[in-house]
Length: 400
Ligand code: CTP
Image: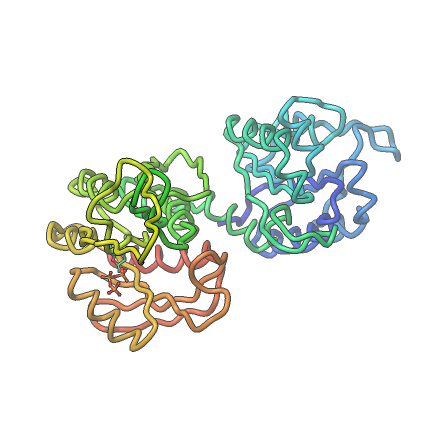
């Protein structure tokens, strides 16, 4: 997908610049042509020689070449590219991009670039969380730039949090997803449910679960990148997405999720039911905050929620696909097969609970896919984005 693609790789002055060498290597291996543009500060972190050797092209950093005084044309470069990737992108560069402060070759190239732009921020957690950075990032998003969100983890400051540049492999996957020439899902309408549901007890309390929504959001993005029109019905999560192919519907309870999903299902080609839907809700919701009784315990009567997957399974037409998830602690495959049948699914994704790093809240997941023929395909521990690719690939085989 990246073969013969012309990519400007903008590198800025962050410690993560050392990863840019690997990024160039990966892009070249995929057949891309890479032109590195560095800010002056980036050269403090990684030698231009390393990057020019790996990219097989002289690195551009100044407006004029020292050697012969020739001019590096940012305009030509901007028109040459099929994509521009700024990785790592510091808070300073993001700020300059957002405000058009064209004081170096990288920013002038950015302003001249007509191709899609990808930005992979890298900075300390507090810098990333600062309202100034948040606003600048949002501004870039509003220009249509693609933000490759930083990952959580240990940072150069030894603090732990969100700000670490996404791994080069993930960045390349994001570019590949964008260029995925086949766009196998264009014209397809896909519903995805994601996140937890909150079942209200009174105005200040609810029953919920730890689902982060990450798996469902990764699926929504991968489907949209491959051309699908996605309706993402999500419970309360702290995630955002701005792919133009995703229409997001925020809900709180299982009941709301049920109605929103049922409304759009008749038009859909596929529904992927990724949400961790509460099976029960309080029988009644107190209008006022429930006060503590002086003596004794409290009993909270619960009633069943609708099973969205099962309801869609009953409505499903020949040309529609239904994909479910299962999280089991014992006899996993047997229970998952039973759910597949009971809910009339086309395949079910079984989340493993055995691996540390898989499931709720984590960025990684380990799955098995079980289909109607009873075939079980096991996958290794991967990022949720890569897992989303595996699930979407399986789905595409069922269209054929
Ligand atoms: N699901 C749903 N609506 C519900 C419950 C579950 O759509 N009210 C979907 C989930 O999104 C998932 C699949 O059904 O795709 C299986 O969810 P799970 O909670 O494991 O299934 P249950 O039928 O509730 O089984 P269990 O007894 O194991 O909780």
